Image (cartoon, rainbow, N blue to C red; front, side, top):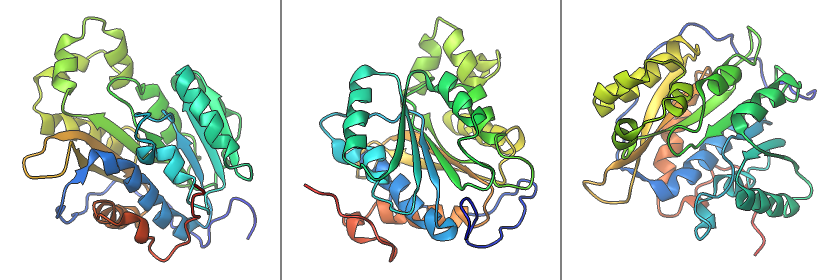
Length: 283
């Protein structure tokens, strides 16, 4: 099989469709969200046998909880071939340099600076060919990811090829406060991609999530788009911290995400590798 080809021919993507997803049985705690990313990618590479991983905000979010660091966990997925890690904070850039040094045999590129500037440049450089199965994590805090960055990702692949898959984190718990406290229209305008972002202030949380889902389907053109709740902590009554919006053209993607979500909430996720090899981490 030549470089950049799928294991088997994939059907061309069609118009957006909405399918039923079984309601979640147990909530996914925010500290396990990196496991969700890792566990989904284990399934993702079983279909493609290769892949490129893009992390738009790649540094560790909590320096004292490196076991929750998505970039660190994803490097355990051996079938992924290329990694593009974006980060603008100096301390986090240094951590990414250490992480890269711990994996000398992997193709890891660290991009220091503003992802909204650098990621479109990386795509335009030809670093990701049309047939390369590609996945992008956008784990923002609030308004950091510009809509133009999503457009660049969604429109990168030519017609007849699957779009870059997206994991887009939409803040939930503090978003009402952030929207109402915003005095500078610049950040939310760039984030929403239009100057009518103030309408989001008047929406309830569910309607706001649906507004994003609809735009991912109809403006970005993704066939399958589903929001998955990420809770603050284990236990009944825990608030939703984020919705992770998963956008894909692949017909198997929703079922893979269902399996990955269920697996990520289990206590012994490390033992649940779907029969696929995960490299042990040296201590």
